[in-house]
Amino acid sequence: MNKNDIEQIIRKEIVEAVMKTQDFLIIGNWKMQKTKQEVKSFLKDIASHDFGQKNKIIIAPPSPYLYLFEEKLRYSNVLYGAQNFYPKESGAFTGEVSVDMLQDFGCKYAIVGHSERRTIFGECNEFISKKVRILIQKNITPILCIGENLNQRKNEDYKHFLATQISEGLQRISQDDVSKVIIAYEPIWAIGTGETASPSQVEELHIYLRKFLVERYGSNIGKDIPLLYGGSVKPSNVKELALAQSVSGFLIGGASLDAKSFIEINNILN
Ligand code: PEP
Image (cartoon, rainbow, N blue to C red):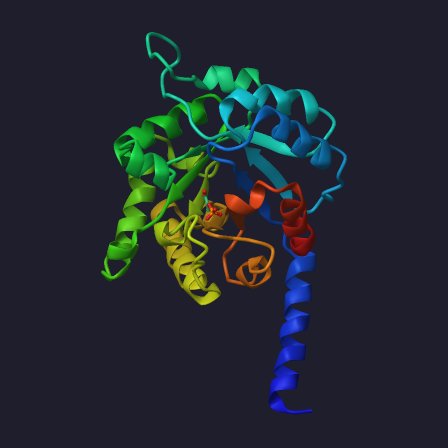
């Protein structure tokens, strides 16, 4: 047996040990996709599927389909959340959805700060922090997305940019409430492009972010905040990415649209 074979065997054992013991958050972000019929068929496939007890499964569909999730996932341990809302209780905000409405449909999670909301809809850290605050007030878990674009990546300072997205996004909540937030690191250059950050890039960044969280919010809080990775995650690369240090789970766009691949991702992480 040569050195390569031995390394392969050791690696396989490490992979299996990590997969068996670590629980992961697996969150699907459907964006503006699917018809009512497609949603029904997806829900039929997953409502009867046993995802096991280890991982937490969450899906964020377009808001008009939330009623179907409430109806069809009543007896399932799959949870669901919103992709967007407006950070006011109610009022003259034509076209918007409030957090109370999300609660009415049983949402337990909501995505905030997704790069598409930041770049297409001009949402800034200041506005995002208002969304985080109202979610915390209403007992909905914020999934705060952060991420750099390719130009920023070329600049060493991009790590500081990401840390600022976190601290400004969380500026309106108390230190204790920071422990209720999930953070998703999603490099913009890897979202929907098919190009994934390598496991070592993800690991380097997650270690940096973990250190930042511990320094900024204290080790009790900072060490436990879930840190997800997102950006072209699929069944073929999720295993390697899961091995990167400090990865608590994944925010998945494209590969979450197909029930089979979504289930496969959970199987791999089980
Ligand atoms: C996303 O939308 O958050 C995302 C990561 O998309 P994809 O998996 O398609 O890159």
